[in-house]
Amino acid sequence: MNFICQRGTIKEKYGTERAAAQMCETTLLNQISLEYQKILGRRLVGIYVHGSLAFGCYRRERSDIDFLTVTRDPPAPAEKEALIDALLKLENDWPAKGIEMSVVLKKYCVNFVYPTPFELHFSKMYTERCRQDRKTFCRAMHGTDRDLAAHFTVTRAVGITLCGESAASVFGAVPPRILSGQHSRRPPGIGRRSRGRHCVLPAESLQGARSPGERPDSFKRAGRQVGRRSASAALYLLD
Image 1 (cartoon, rainbow, N blue to C red):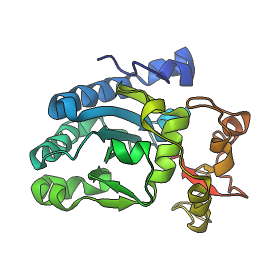
Image 2 (image 1 turned 120 degrees about the horizontal axis):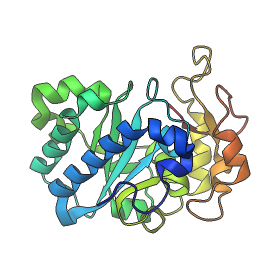
Image 3 (image 1 turned 90 degrees about the vertical axis):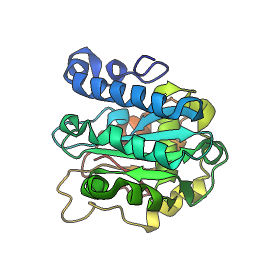
Image 4 (image 1 turned 135 degrees about the vertical axis):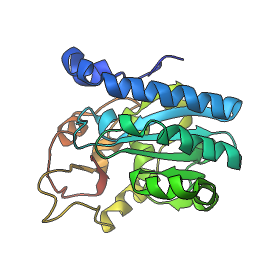
């Protein structure tokens, strides 16, 4: 299945010139998508990129690649280990801040639950743990994650569909009261030490989209302001 086959291509988000500079990310995500389809088979619903790459402000030297893997039912233990193995084998191709991936069930994407259950999570900080004992890691790495509320909202609004069902059919709307609740938790990296490396989006800038995939003007502006602390609900960080 071709990379970003349904909505939100790299070219659309970055323009032809900058899209050419993202070819390594295109290749990397193609490889991950193909491996995950082999591992999960019919269990896989789809793979969706969110974060800075989806927003159109990705920088390889200071960003990570964030994506959600949505399944119909929980992956088997061996499948979880294979998902991690696939990422570790591609470590040399990761951007500076690595890869962040969560496996979530479709039923929680369609009918949102908060805090949201996840089946597996991986990021660069867990690389050594996975290399030493990925079986134990995969057995323990599940639970709930409050940040998935923001990730789901971003994916619904501007996410990139690598394969599978469209994001519009998978991700339902997250209640505004939950997004606004993010304001009570100051995101990491925001404050005196952030030095303009992050962007905070107000919740209403994403809620203003009339349909999945549509960027309201306020969202476009917010998505390109760096180092700005929102006066309203702090929803999302661009790493």
